[in-house]
Image (cartoon, rainbow, N blue to C red):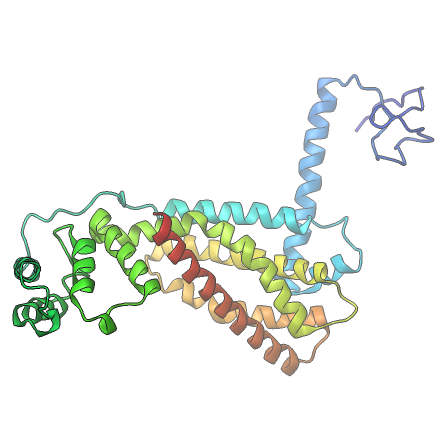
Length: 342
């Protein structure tokens, strides 16, 4: 390709530094004439695409077929030939969550299901509601000295509620109110604690609002915020690597790059899983990748940290266990948060 002519002026147009040859030693900009023909624009476009494609193919080659070596090369300073790890992770996670969201969209979670016919259980639940309300009213009208736990009518109503799990499957939209009433009527030592009581009440409020779609609402909220959770969990994974594999010659940032490459590989594999699931319609396909992914992690850790097979296996098991525990805790905290703000 015909290159552009060099400028006679040796002052860089970008930073103002002196340019002794073709490229500025301060900012790297090429000191060429700014007027470009359409042919030059087209040539630059294809050059950039080809250059990026070659870097991407080489990066994917090492990522897929040489576990851990891509990170090792990056840490050793061999970087120009490969796609930047953070850029690759952001692009891959964007495609992954976009694909995941597109195949998991369902019915509007804010629409309650309204069956045409009431099931026998629903009718029984409604009778329990009537019994409970009647007993509650009579108890409130009774003498102040009366003890709710000694009232036979209350016991019958409370047992009916618990026997038929009315609060968990309420179809009347009164679950939260009835939960509060039931807590008030119970002896103090049998009532739920402050944390459980508030969490349960929020759960019943969501049931009253969304009906059987409560789980769908939480799942869609989880899916919406899942990329943010992964950004929180990724530094945690890097910290586990630093703690478990403990190499004094490696900084935390080096472990973070390894964590980024591992997560990128996982996203790519599960993108294949999503596409495969669209063909065979079997959610078990995601479980098929668990063992291969773990073996990949063991091989990558062995190459990255120069460990023996046994050492890499044992330390990888510990990292995965701690990471799973941390993920579970974060997921539970997220669900509690969703109960609080949904």
